Amino acid sequence: MGAGNGRIGQIKARDRHLWLISISVIVALTLTIITIYAPDLMGIPMAPSRAELSTYLSGLAVLICLFCLYVIQAHARLDRLRDELVEKEQEKTEVQRLLREVEERSNEHLKTKEALEREMAERKQAEERVVYLAYHDGLTDLPNRRLFEDRLGQELSRLRWRKRVMAVLFLDIDRFKQFNDHLGHHVGDALLVAFSERLKLCLRPGDTVARLGGDEFAILLTDLAREGDVSLIIQKILDSLIKPINVEGSDLSVTTSIGVSLSPKDGEDTSTLLKTADMAMYRAKEEGGNSFQYYDPVFQKQRSEWLSLESALRLALERQEFLLHYQPQVDLDSGRVVGVEALVRWRHPEKGLISPGKFIPLAEETGLIIPIGEWVLRTACAQAVVWRSGGFKDLRISVNLSPRQFRQKNLIETVGRVLKETGIEPRCVELELTESIMQNAETSVKALRRLKAMGLEISIDDFGMGYSSLSYLKRFPINTLKIDQAFIHHLTDDPDDPLIVTAIITLAHNLRLKAIAEGVETADQLKLLRLLRCDLIQGYYFSQPLPADEMSGLLAEDRRLS
Image (cartoon, rainbow, N blue to C red):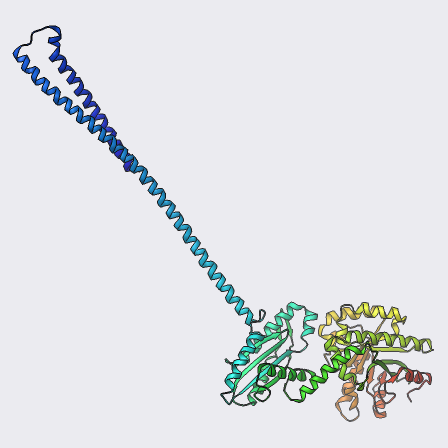
C-alpha cells in the first residue's frame, strides 16, 4: 500500500513538470506568433532576413505544437497509468482482505477440526469407560458378575481339553450388615474396597476376583494340578484377614465365609458352579463363619428345605402357628420362682414343633424376626399381666431381643407401645440381649439407657461366649448376667468351667449385678452353683419350658427348689 502511494506521488510530480513545460512552450509560441504577424498587422513591410526568420519561427511553432500534442498525449497516458495504479492498489487491497478472510476461515476451520478431534477423543474415552463399567464394579474396580461369568465360560471351554482342576470360590463378609448399620454406608464402602485389595494380594496372576454385588465376591482359580491346592489358597485368604482392616482410623476385625465348587466334579457350566459354590458358602456361614466349605450334593436338598421353610415361616404369623413356652427362673436363696423366660415355639401344621435353633436364624436372616419378636413381646407381657392379676405380683417376665431387633430404629417406640397396650408395669419386664451388642458399644449404650429409663430390666444372655468387653460392660445399664449353659454343662467334670463360672459370678457381684446360670440339669451342678453364690438358676433340673396353662399350674402349687 505504501509503495502504491509513492508511485502515485511520482506521477503527480511529473504532471506538474509537464504542465510547467507546456505553459512555457505556449508562452514561447505566443511570443513567436506575435513576432511573426505583428508587423503585418501593423502594416510594417517585412525585410528578407525577417522573412527567413519568420519561416524558421513558423517551422519552430509547428514543432512546438507537435511537442504540445506529445505532452498532451503523455499526460493522458500518465492519467491512464495513474488510474491503473489506483485500480491495482484497490485490487491489491481487496486481495489482501480476501486473504485475511481466507486465513480467518482457515483458522476457524482448524479450530473446528481440533474441537471435533477433541470431542471424538472424549466420546471415544466415554464409550470405553461405558464398556469398562459394563464389565467392572464401580466401587472396587474389580470385574463384575458379567465379566466373571464370561471368563468362567472361557475357562470351562479350555478345561474340556486339559485334565486340570478349576475352582469357583463364593465369598461373603461375615456381619457386614452390622458394619453398615452401626458405622454408616461410607464405612461399609471403604471396607469393601479394602477387603478387595486383601483378596487380590492372595491370588496368582492368572486368577480372577470379582465383586458380584453387596458384600459377595467370587474368585476363579484356574489351572490347578490337584484339589488340595484350593485349600492352600483359601487358608491364605483367611490368614490375610487376621490382621484388622483399618477404615477411616478404625481397626475392623473382618472375617469371611467361603463356599467352594470344583469343576468338573460339581458342575460343568457357569450357573451350576456359582449356585453350588453359593450353597457351600451358606453352609460355612451356618457353621459360624470365618471358614470355608466344599460343596456337597446334600446341600441341594437342605437348601430346598430351607427355602420351603422360609415360605412357611412367612405364613406362620398370619396362621397363628407360633406359641410361647415359659421356663421358670428360681432364686437360690428362697428356692421360689421369681421369674419366667418366654421361649417361642413353631407348631408347623405338617412337621409339628420346629426347634427355635432351626427357624430363628432363618427369621433373623430374612428380617421376619422383627414381626415375630414383637408378637413374642406382646404375648409374653399380656400373659404376665394375667399371672400378676392372679396373685403372682412379683413375677418377672424375660423376653429375648435378637440382634436385628435391637438394631431397629423404632425399637424404643415399639417396646413402649407394647407396654402401654398390655398395661404391664415396666419393672416386671426383663429384656435379654446377647453380647453382640458390644460390637457397637456407643450406640448400644444409648439404646440401653433409654430402655432402662422406661423402667425395664436388662440382662446379658449367654455371657462369656461372645464379644465380652469388660471396659464397656461397666458402662452398660444392665441388671443381670446369664452364664452360658456351655459352662454349666461340664461344671462338675471339667476343672476349667468352675473357674470361669466363679469369675463371672464374682464379676457380676462386683458390678452390683445378679448372676443367673442357665442349663442346670443335675443336683451336683445346683450344689456347686450354690457354693459359688450364684443368685438364680434356670434349667431342666427344676422344670422344662412349659405352655402357659401348665406354667400357671406350677405357679399355683408354689413349687420350690429344695
